[in-house]
Amino acid sequence: MERRKFISSTSLAGLASVIGAPIVFANNITEDYPLLALQDVNPFELFKKNKQMVVLNDKPWNIEAQAHLLNDVITPNSAMFVRNNGKIPEKIDAKNWKLVIDGESVHQSKTYSLQDLKSQFKQYSYQLTLECGGNGRSEFNPPAKGNQWTVGAVSCAKWTGVRLKDVLAAIGIKNNAVYVGYHAADTHLSGDPRKEPISRGIPIAKALQDETLLAFEMNGEAIPLAHGYPLRLVAGGYPASVSGKWINRISVRDKVHDGEKMSGDSYRVPKFPVAPGESVKAEDMQIIESMPVKSLITYPKSGATMKLAQQLHINGHAWAGELNVAKVMYSIDFGSTWHSCTLKNAVNRFAWQQFAATIQFPQKGYYEVWAKAIDSKGVAQPMLVPGWNPKGYLNNACHRIAVKIV
Ligand SMILES: Nc1nc2c(c(=O)[nH]1)N[C@H]1C(S)=C(S)[C@@H](COP(=O)(O)O)O[C@H]1N2
Ligand SMILES: [Mo]
Image (cartoon, rainbow, N blue to C red; front, top):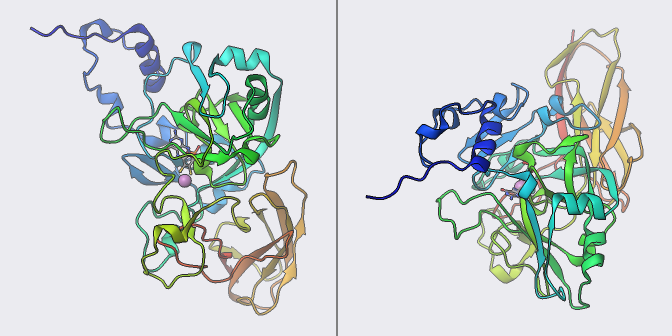
């Protein structure tokens, strides 16, 4: 008879943190016992999300914000979108967590515990914009497969950790380093332990930027489980898919990292415009790097009703990948005329910037308020959905809200 495998104490601690209570009679169940609490879960409670967040998928969990939930300058966990490619790791033992740094371009691989990272390197905090490459996908036609994100797959939380460049400097990397790739503890939906759900990375120059962190805190607390507890690579301005959650290995590569979702159409767009629905050859696709200029009106909520005598105050955020936003404009006449918004500087590179305007409407009726950001190179958001691409990435069309004046 096969011996029954009972749950180890480290797994138990992990399970208890996911469920929110210790399993009192855990000795009576086996490791593969399907706990009900882990099956029919309420995602808003499980992930401590605002009830107005929208669940796009539960296997894996994919949850987006609505524009008006993102009004804070620093995105709180409650409004932060969740994008998972696989299953969130259930058994996390932060005390024994290991980060291995290896790859062709390190002289010798090295392993760090979280405590090593925290005690051996200086800690930094940056507010970093993380936008899913597929944010806005729902508007492409013909439709692209994948989560149908509208506008809410973007966040700008404050991340604290150590600089990846300091850790790489301590190890010493070879001159032939081209890329770093991450590996993580989440598991493939198929349950096959040999398959990784995602293993992406960044060019070495991006890895060596001051703001690229091995982060262990988000908004001053341990990173929430869904967002990468206990350790996350955070690289703002690039598609958020490069910011690996639950990371346990960073490989310094002598070539472009070839992990899961680095090839084919994944996180790639055609090098030149293609007709909607056209198939594109692999060699004509390129990896998405800095994200395009974009903005979001976070106040008021679309559908607001106002009295004509009142002025409408609007505000929101604008970001432009690795660039700054130079200007934000608004229009109330479907783009015929544009007016300037006030615009704040970013608190640090790769953080979104706040815009605001006060609008006086000419008469009663229905209006749309459109916002358009322009980056430091003079590139503006398009008013229509931009270039179709096979996976529906990089839709940075202008955001708009409806307003009724009575
Ligand atoms: N290990 C791991 N890291 C990951 C992912 C994942 O599925 N597994 N998803 C990526 C993608 S596609 C995005 S958009 C962001 C989402 O980050 P968030 O869920 O914290 O908002 O995490 C990235 N990092
Ligand atoms: Mo993503």
